[in-house]
Amino acid sequence: NIGGVLIPLSDILKEKAKLELNKPIVIYCKRGIRSQIAIQKLSRYFPDTDFYNLQNGILRLKGK
Image 1 (cartoon, rainbow, N blue to C red):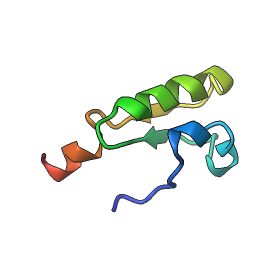
Image 2 (cartoon, rainbow, N blue to C red):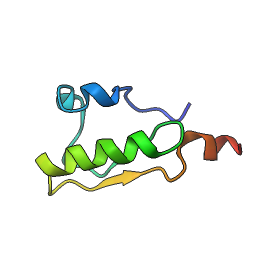
Image 3 (cartoon, one colour):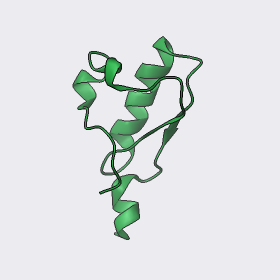
Image 4 (cartoon, rainbow, N blue to C red):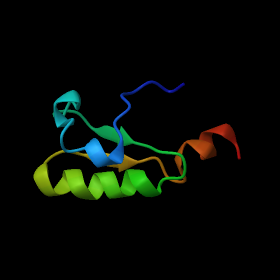
């Protein structure tokens, strides 16, 4: 568990109140694809926030 808040991709804009937009935000998913899509959506609405994608997703942390 690396902590964080679980927000499904389909709800990312509806749940934006859960994000601390004044800090850099790392977004991750299983393989890194959905998190990149989430960053694209969020960046349109919050261009001044620093979003980072965990490259290759959470599987990379597990060594798979």
